[in-house]
Length: 179
Image (cartoon, rainbow, N blue to C red; front, top):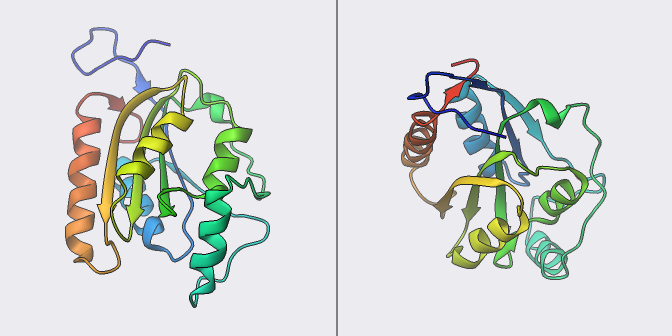
């Protein structure tokens, strides 16, 4: 697949999708910011059996599942991913890696030759998480990656501003439908 930039004379508008998993709605906020900025489709990944977002058990069970590379069953979606040229994928960081529901999504969907932009939301350092996430999307044209550190503790407005700037930097290289 060839990607056409704004400088091309044969410009092609890219159909764009935002895919994310969010247990506590922090990653959801970033996903909705991207979706609003691009006027594109959005897909929330939902496991069939979800963790309790309240209390500390989510850290134990979520971290164990992430460490064990679990692939929980997720609710089906009716989107035809073949029609999307650019896919943003976002996840919280659990045990220094991306979440099991996103692992399932990546295993169940063919993203080869897709333009993919990744982002993570982490309570601490996520150097390993973004690198592991990037390795999981082999065969894709990896556009960029963004890290949001301590999203629940930091100023939400600064996270939204950072997200908009990131999206604009990606958008500047492509013509995106809906924008």
